[in-house]
Image (cartoon, rainbow, N blue to C red):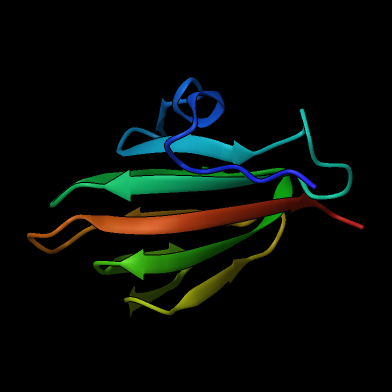
Length: 113
């Protein structure tokens, strides 16, 4: 069993700027996981944007707090706490925090089967 806290040094050491807008950290990744690509937490400040990008893995964005406008390919929807967004492999996706509060998401990514 591995238990990892978002305040653990192993997590804090992975802090990076994700796609131009969010401050992200890898909670669990390929250093530990066998089948899943990673579990990350990302914080998107007010009026910041995770720029449109395409990933080689299937992803799920799960909104923990705050809200924003999620775009997957040509579809756009407002998302908020408790919403899970499935992002198929190879689709363009972006998240814009169009509010005055921080938006925090979990991102789970997995290689296509």
